[in-house]
Length: 526
View (tube, rainbow, N blue to C red):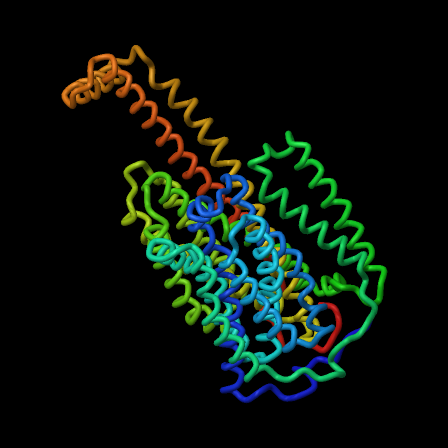
């Protein structure tokens, strides 16, 4: 199989100050992509009104970005080899900024969706390539600190996005959530152009482009992400559209995998999965992605639907946990030098489980003060999994294969998150219906307590000037609404409980991972 020479293995690492300048440059670029994944969520209502779209139509602003993102993630290594690492990174940054400007200047929904597709395509290359550049730039002993910097961005980004987006939408116009990428992006481009090692012609691989493989990958991952994003709204497999997406995804991805394994010049080198640490890491990453995204999914929805928080208030609620994650990176990067990554992942999983168990006990009276410490604890626990997981999966494979491994590794985590959100969205609806049915059975029209409560509320409404019939109708409606809120709160508790079980399920999978890694070899299967 054709392989390009590896820069990190053939020449000395950059000096220390340049290494960290490179790290800050790629972290800034990755932050742009990760923040833009979540910053749009808080602006959908404004976008809908501005563009005259329906609720289902405006959802494609998020879906289109996610689909484009997962398509490009596994291709990032191939694109870097074909065009040069630095050239591909800087081009992706510039193109991402241009796509962001296109989003901001969009005046129709189709224009915005097309711009978001471009944003997702160029942004996906930033995420995977940032991590591989860090592995190729830093020596083994500095990898935990370098990956900690990437981890701060990856974990805090989803919380920073809604906070920043909520502030922008509240004080400015929704278009500024895209325009803000321009100054930050320019700084990232200048830093990257000045610090990244120049590409060498002998490092760039020229081979015939396998257009069939590219088409199969785009169709397979695109339809898979679509069914995960739209499955709940379409009624899952009761919908012919979702069934078609499922069959198309399965056929395309199986066909794609066969083509990649049969050629010496694959666009996605699946043979890197021969490294046990990476193969096991991708499997565990899928499950961890489900848990991490699941742990972040329910709290913002609870805050907005039950606590009636604004987007900005919800972002501020999530911010302390993100800051705790950033602070924890320093501690965990040092622990990685002394302890087996599997032990840290297990400890992190148990810490998050304790947080999820606490959150599962929420009630309609739960306030932000009751969520503060569970979210802080969750932030610390996620770091204890995220950083050691990256090192366990990618730290032991040869540096020349890290770029290929990071694309697959980040893809599995992304798909795990999409799968988790799809499951939890469906679960919230079904469990709310279940709990509502149980509660209604207990709210009997002949129960003296129920009758007394209706009478008290009726009296209160009469005192406000309503006639007796209207007052009683409002009292019954209010009682029904109270039952619905209680059912919704119980369903949120169920999602936290399920997320806790997902993290417990991670523990047996840790035996598939290798222990404390040694320095990367130049080849061979692990």
